[in-house]
Amino acid sequence: MNDNEKLWDHLTRMRRIRALEEKIAQLRAENQIVGSVHLCNGQEAIYVGACAALDLTRDAVFPTYRGHGWAVACGVPPRAILAELLGRSTGISGGRGGSAYFTAPEYGFFGENSIVGAGAPIATGAALAATFDGSGRVSVASFGDGALNQGAVHEAMNFAAIRSLPVIFIVENNSYSELTPISAMVKVDQLFRRANAYGMPGARVDGNDPAAVADAVAQAVARARRGKGPVLLELITQRLVGHYIGDVQHYRPEGELDEVSKVEPIVRLEQKLIGLGRTREELDELHASVQNEIETAAAEALADELAPTDTVLEHLYA
Image (cartoon, rainbow, N blue to C red):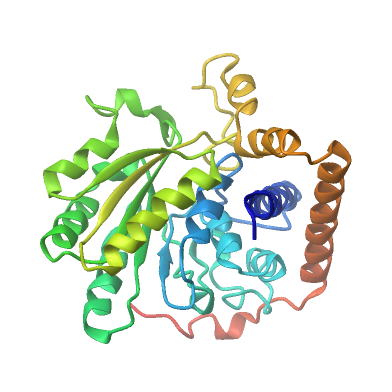
């Protein structure tokens, strides 16, 4: 696959994530989906780029509660994701997990978690196991900029560094810790610099460029597989929607969304592909094809049987 084809593949995957999130927003507004939903519009390049650098037959991704995009990038079928959010028995977790807790380990996607930063110690545990089972597995823990202040994240990074574990810590820095600007949360907002304190490499990467993300993650994966330990990557991006469904984003300065919409990953990649010879007609056809794919997946999921309520306590551990 040449560079042009790789970029087209990245765009296709990002378009699929965006279309899925837009459909989820519509279904949530119609109360077809209930409960908490956190969308990732604008952050698609992180998931697509990172997963392009992983071997998901053995590597493991531990995302945040904003995990639909990670799931799609890992290869989880959109229909199975939609069925899960719709409470259908055909959902990837049998309709039990909903938006915030579904998991698909057969795709290397080891579940969302509504506890902020909780994926970091779990991913570190998976990385520790990899040093014993001979799998060569690399774990990825992804969390938001605000989660970097969680004690469990600090403990996970410290332990991973001491044991030289094969884990990559990815900070999805969309500049807001929920509703608060990261600049109001920390004195030094170059979060990757915290890596030095743990004795691991750190880097800040353009999180709106899937190729740049893929390159950075590939280098971190290669380092981890050589037994050199963890890496902290701060991926700079912006979300184009609220922190949660119903967030009116009153905290964002006037005009900010208009400005970030001009440099969001799909717009940027389409412009780059046009410069490489692709036509607007080709881009429009791709958009229409992906939209049709997601509409079909949603219609099929809506027609599926609801998950039975008499088995709700099965697979539950406390």
